[in-house]
Image 1 (cartoon, rainbow over the protein chains, first blue to last red):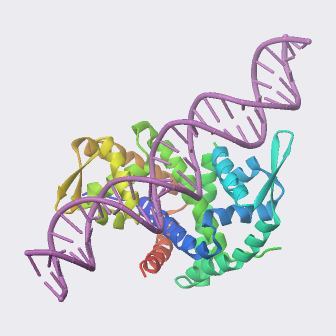
Image 2 (image 1 turned 45 degrees about the vertical axis):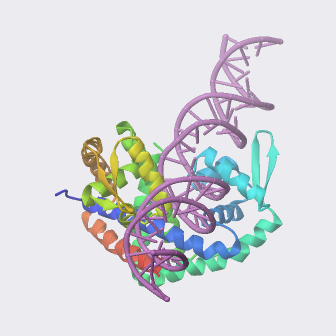
Image 3 (image 1 turned 90 degrees about the vertical axis):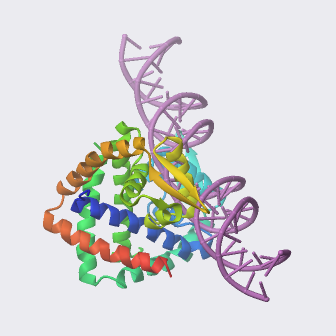
Length: 145
Length: 145
DNA sequence: ACGTATCACTTGACTAGTCAAGTTAAAATC
DNA sequence: GATTTTAACTTGACTAGTCAAGTGATACGT
């Protein structure tokens, strides 16, 4: 029989959770005719605009190619615009994008909040936040080295 | 300024961690000419074989279509075989698949374990495991309803 | 002034996944 | 016994991502 370490058990739980909650998230935002990934990107742009594609890619830890494709989709839907200046493309929300973001934001926040509240106390959530922040920062540092 | 809830902050950290650690994992198993996702599936099959495609899909919370494609790739590489009996296809590892699994298993376990050990104490890991297990089980229940 | 390096982005070929519609054959119903 | 239902799987069209090679324009060293 194969032994598993505590670390590998955490790994499995976290990846399952992420995958499953992504499915639920997508289900939740489907009524706005948008995906959870697209909402995440719009949210980042809304917070930091104007920003370049590479800055955005950095913030969400996605490759340059990945961000290029994602922004093409968002541009096709009319949610964002790209202004070329020299070799950089500056990204910002269109009015349609801003409206969509405002529309979805609160709903998605409520959805995430109640899912957590339904199974963890506030104190547990604080503890969980502290712990995942620690591992996430560690992983990020490791990735950039 | 937009307010974020504790829950949404946890969400961001967890999804970033999952994505970043998947990148690191893939980097780690690249030398075995396999992907992290493929290893996960081989590991499940090794533990529960023989099992049907739908049972496997269930275990890793993937759609029927997704598992079909993944198994086609693994079959193409010669790691698994599918035995048709009536309408079910029973999945099991080939010898090549078993060897590959044995080869990668310990390395991947070590990788995951040291990444955790580098940033969390054993007590913190236990706490983290308890908390993510709670949310994951809750999400799973929610998904199946 | 010319070739070269670099930067920001795109694109091709791929993995990994979704959903919905399409097979196929057994099982259940009438 | 013929017809319909259901179960297990596949496939087409899509999103979302990777890496590596390609593009184009600026900057830089000799």
